[in-house]
Every structure is written in structure tokens, then in C-alpha cells.
Image (cartoon, rainbow, N blue to C red; front, side):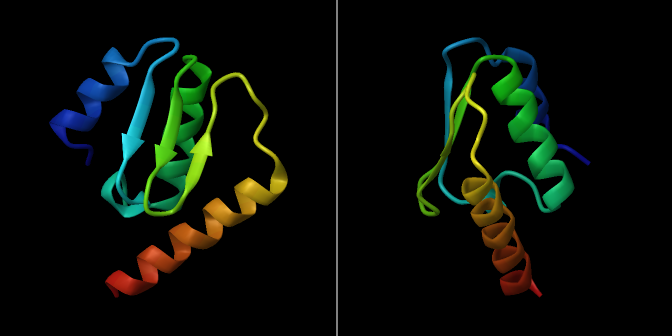
Length: 83
């Protein structure tokens, strides 16, 4: 279930916004939901930056496969740390 704040973010994000998040696991707890959310934000013309993970997903750019692989790897690490 999405938090109220996350739903508001999804509704209010606009083109040229930058969403800055401390850690990947602060956004969602499922890799599928995370990928979907980042793509949704990028599709609206906004960028997403994860500070601790040093990853940025820019709006309007096709993210290269290495970035996507790193993204998936980091999410798995965060999930494993929670177990």
C-alpha cells in the first residue's frame, strides 16, 4: 500500500521537477514497484536521484543498461539488508 505522501508525489510531479531521495529503500520496498514508479516519474518529464546510491534517472533519456543493472542490484541489496 502506498503512503499518502507517495500518492501526492505521483499526483503533483511535473515536467522538469527533480525528485531527490536519500536511499532507494525509502521510496518503496518492491523492485517491481520501484521500477514502475521511477519510469512513471521519468515519463512525466521529471528526474529521480538517489543520493546514497549515487544514481540518477533523468527525464527524457533512455537509461543505459548498466544504470538499470546497478539499480536492480542496489534494490536487491537493500531488500536483503532488511531481512
